[in-house]
Length: 123
Image 1 (cartoon, one colour):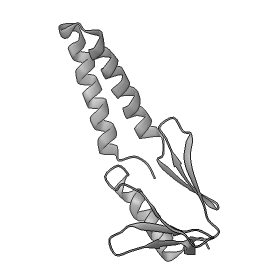
Image 2 (cartoon, helix red, strand yellow; image 1 turned 90 degrees about the vertical axis):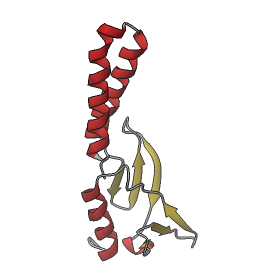
Image 3 (cartoon, helix red, strand yellow; image 1 turned 90 degrees about the horizontal axis):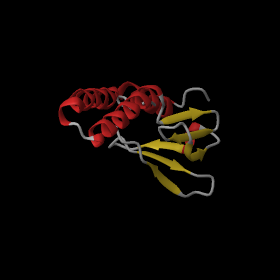
């Protein structure tokens, strides 16, 4: 699942505004914050937040490093409740919530992900 494009575009627009204001304001922090916003916005457009691979769900950061790995044997280990919250029941029987913020992920990717888990496709 990718980051929401609206947030990425907002970051790039904010960076353009800050970098355009730099000659008038003449403070180095303006250009620094503008540059950081530009890099973060581009990374949000190009990097995924969640990756569903064979047997593992990976949570990634903006640099592409894996922050968390959730191994699973089959999609039947995942459950989606009425509120749309996603739960994973590990092999040991411990049920944990997978924290996916619908606010931060692309809506189409989220629907495809939940449909894949609900219909247990690819099993």
